[in-house]
Length: 420
Image (spheres, rainbow, N blue to C red):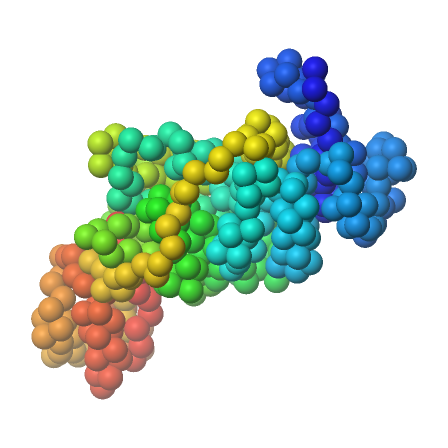
C-alpha cells in the first residue's frame, strides 16, 4: 500500500472534522483506494488545540514554511477561510507542486482566474466542499452532467438563511427573533451579514454557474438581495397563496446570456425546494436531455464539509500527473438583468375611493399585469394591500414600484418579492 502525506492548514471546525474522517475511516479509505493517507502536518496559530486533539506534538506547527518546503507532502488542505493569508499560501503550494483542496468559496469567487491559472498537471486545486457542504454538486457538474448542456441552476445554498426563514414560517417569529435563535445555536455568526445579506450564496453561485455554463461568471455580475428586510407578514401572505419563502441562488443560460441572482423568492409548495427545511441545502439542475435533477443534503458542518474535502483529497491523489482538462473558458459573459418573473408586492395606501385605481392604472402603464390582489385590513385610514403579478420583466416591475412610491395616496411600498 502506498503512503501519501498531506497537510491541513487551519484546525477549526472543518479542519478538525476533516482530520476525524481521515483517521476514523483510514482503513476503509486505504482498502478502497490502495493508498494510506497520513496527516503529516497541521497548521494553526493555536498549536495547543491540535495537541489537545491527541495529535503528536511534532505534527503541529505555526509555520507555513514547514508545509510548503516539505517535499514529502503532496496534497494540502486549506480550511483557514478568508482571503489572506489563504490566497498566498495556496499559490505557493501550487508553485511548489502540491495539489490543494479548499472549502473557501469567497477566495475562489474573488480570485478564480489567478488560482486556476496557477494550476499545473501535477498541482491542481479542488473545491467540492466550497458549495453546499457534503452535497457532491461540483463532481456532478464536472462529471455527472457531461452529456448535457445545463440551462439552469436553482438552489438553497445557504443553510443559515434557510433555518431563519423556516423559524419565521413555522413559528411566526420576527426576523430578529429567528436570527437570534440561529446565532445561539451556532448557525449564524455574531456578524451575520455574509449569510443574511446574500454574500455567501453569491460566492457559491459564481462557482457553480461557472462550472455549469463553462464560462467564468464573476460574482460582481450577480444581482444580490438578502433576507434582512423580510417580515413575518410577508411569509404569512405567501403561505396563504400556497408559497414558501426561500433565499435562492438562480442562474440561467439562455441564448448566450446569463441571468444570475441571489434573492428571496416565493416557491410553490409543490416544488421540491419548498420542502427543504432547517439548515439543509438543495440544488436543482436542469439539463437539456436529462431534465430536472435535485441534490439534497447537509450544507455545512464539520463532518459533512469534511466528507467533501476528503473526497477531494482522494481525487487529488489519484489525478496527480494526469493532464488537466479545460473546464471553464475565458472571456466576459453577457448578462441579462431584465429577466422575466412573477412578483409579489405589498403597499400601504389611503383607504379612499380612487386610490387602488391609481395604482392599477400605473401598473398597466408600466406593462405589469395583475393576477390577484387582496386588501386585508384598514388601520387609521390606511389599507394594507398585497398584489401578485403575472410574468413581467424586472425593469418594468422596478419602474412600476418607483412610480407607485411617488403616488400621494401611497404611504409606502412594504415589500417586493419574486415568485418562482
